[in-house]
Image (spheres, rainbow, N blue to C red):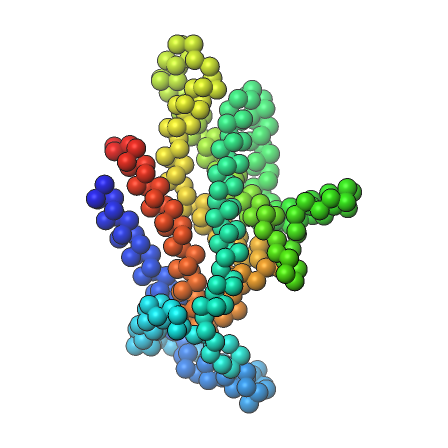
Length: 310
């Protein structure tokens, strides 16, 4: 147990260090002092023609180190952290608390929906006859060939079609004024991770079903559904937990696109708008996204180790 704790602490420290080093990287190869001076001149109206501006590639290890220290200080003193916006420095925390909750809701909600739908569908899949299984595999393969943005737009169009033909608006399809869309974006972002979970579980559960203990259980007269739930699913659950990192990356890679399509000003759009001018802002936002998933992963790892000390 202690070795696992040390591994988790090391993973946390390396992840935080990697985020800070990565988000500070532009300062290493671009002269940010010139960039910020030109940005301020443009924002204050002192410069109107910026077509002649060129920021050449340079190598500035000292500026890079200074930016790393600045990011660490801003992260520690988060209540007083500011970011540059339109010629002035604004407090970061109030803006972060405005854009963060909805985005993290989509990520965590998408994770739980993908696990719920993926596990439920795979259990049904294992009950179906072979010819139905083969058809399902072909359908999954066909859906995976569609671009991510197309899948998300299809979900929106499906809700619009239902509303047009029945007059029933099941969910808000975009953010409009004070009305926020929650369930539909969460459902949309969970589709591709769900397919990933289904494919992975199909592979592992079909392999698990060929093992000797399953044949032995069948020989004792146990029903297939009982064997599936009590033995096969239990033995594949730990393996599925190991895929949470991949599921997280699928969710995160689709978050910006989701926020644009659903007209949601979330944390990834906030980083896209201001992260270039404020490397410390990008680091703080990425850490804010990373930490809840690290807590889930760490808690799950400790629980699995406690239930199965092997």
